Length: 529
Image 1 (cartoon, one colour):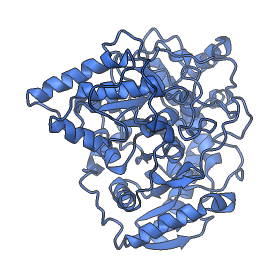
Image 2: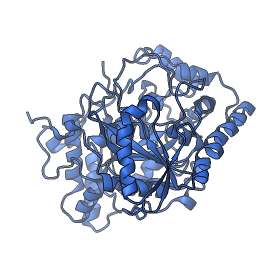
Image 3: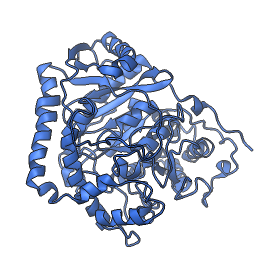
Image 4: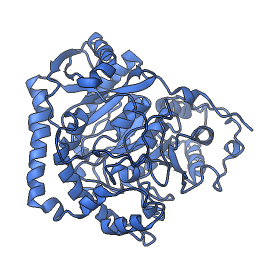
């Protein structure tokens, strides 16, 4: 049975055209770039209310069976009307004013509960916005609603738990028998299907770039603490970050312009203001010209699946003037055993700190409380919670000497001997590799597996996605094309604070390749009754 915390679009909302499932008035939002929506608003060609109704109509008629959305903001159209009023008075707040954005359901947003996909937090109505939501709201964005997520961003069990108990099991929009991948799966689906102008996800291990890869969108995982984590249900402050997900690089850069920056509520972000820049202004169709880029080619079974598509992507980059240099496929060591130690200690410390600050309506105030609730509640107790139990058994958090030693090893492995070594030895500005393979068949919940953080090395080769996660370095994925009708992505990664370079390189590739193909089902609107 599929649960919903809020029934989609049947709330007491003044939905107008959406409530009777008739087509929205004038503005067709399908595949329209955020930048174009912004330009049309500025030119007076449409209104935020019309645009918001367009997205709501798509969600109402096309969201099933994808299970991408958990809830719609009760005041979504009121926010849009307020934006239109500002614009009419000549007081628009900037290029995002009136633009509807969806957020993964681990971001606090006033007026909606932050559930992280768990009924333990169904009454978690925050008193304040997360810093990311606060910044986008201040820029005039319409906080449209919450996207589905793997429960607690995928950190509960090493067995499969696709989607969440609150939002149901997510489905890939290109083939609903396949996975939407990663805990920001609802955000990836929503961006692909034009359920919003763009979306926001989070990544700890690979949960922005992985769903970007299989849903055919752009996903940006920034340097740790370039974007504040305050008000996001955590796994690990050492590795957590929010990041934009969109249908093209420019739109992602527009979001990052607003999201990035220092926040006193996240002390780790103190350096962010000194490193942020105008990411849109640095985009260029000549960015690859003369740039030396390190190439990690796929190996094993993945080479046979994505190798030809990757070769075509490299040919595009070379035609744009990039100098490509191959590096050994096994140059990166798998750091997941070290990441396991980090995340197990951090989760207990960081989640308990978050829960302690939740309103009194939330009865779970620690990881131990969460475990007890989930064992007792019939809506939750059908799933294992071995990662929680292993985390609860840790002691000392980030002050544990074994933890400190592990972190030093992990950072040396992924920074000094990993990404920074590659960039230095090969005199490269960035590293490029396939983000992953096409979406796999979705197995039943509870299917055993090694999980995201196995205790032993060797269950998978080293990957650029995992290396950047542990190093705290940026990585982004941009669509590379289709393999047997399913999208795959191209990753660009670099050292700390290199987002502007990575976005510019990816933009040049994107504009030269035009490799993104929207989901076929995105073009089919449910008929009016």
